[in-house]
Length: 409
Image (cartoon, rainbow, N blue to C red; front, side, top):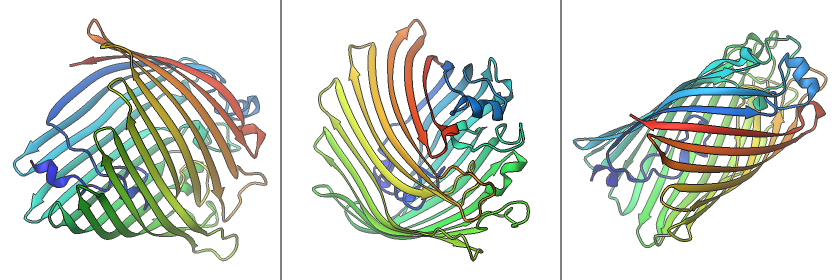
């Protein structure tokens, strides 16, 4: 089948972030043709919408707790066309807030994919678009009452990968990806950026061993609004990454993915205030199907990426997460999850006397899924967040609880 030939070719599945390490993410799993379209509605009580203290709520002019309703239509489509395939995975919805109506906004996220075998070569292409209100945990505050918080992020990316060779043995590959990221708020235009990611390497696939890749990528990031008069910071970033990755299914119950790379981040166009990064970045994922009813997953990652919300040159993000799924019976599923995230923010020009330089977020969640309930699938979930930051105004702890209804059409 065509997809069997393309497994391991696609390397831009997390193009929305467009980080060099992300461009070498785990290969897509083989899929059967399907068309799933779902209508859904989610209601969420949020005990801390502003993701900070009461003082931050006052600065942002928002109520601290709120209820949000999000109706949406979601699609997951995969079609085989001759020697190729087309795919769509997307969601289009709208957020309605009961109290903080200033945050009402569309919530759109779509990814298109296409691939084919052309002689000895496999070609995969992707395009992604997203648009939504900025997550308030990803925004710093600003003096203007409205300019800081009411902000729509719009992202677009397009990319592709070509790999030539047999499905077993050595296969050289090349990747190319372009992305843009924009803010609607005038105060945040200095963080708008365009980027190009390029590179390549060699992969080796052997059923008894797994898949090994050695790669090198470059990324050029252009903050085109940073004129050092209205918007400050490095006008350009240059990122260089080289490393390797390994993925393997160990029997039918265990699968593993590991990526380790050396990354250099250089701030261009400035003389003073440079905080270049040189060090290791990584990704890891381990999935264990302990039984027909229990599945466990653990992930770790560290990477350097630009940020739309903090007026920084880049941030280093380290994440650890674990998840457990329990199939209770033919209709009910329970999921437990937890994560620990650390972010460090790097400025070359400070626009205020106090800035957020690092934070740490612990999250614990549980969700309960019931299907069917009449024509619907019902999901109940609860999440607890605890955030500590170098500035107390950004520290908080809160509970969120939600209910979702889904219906296939």
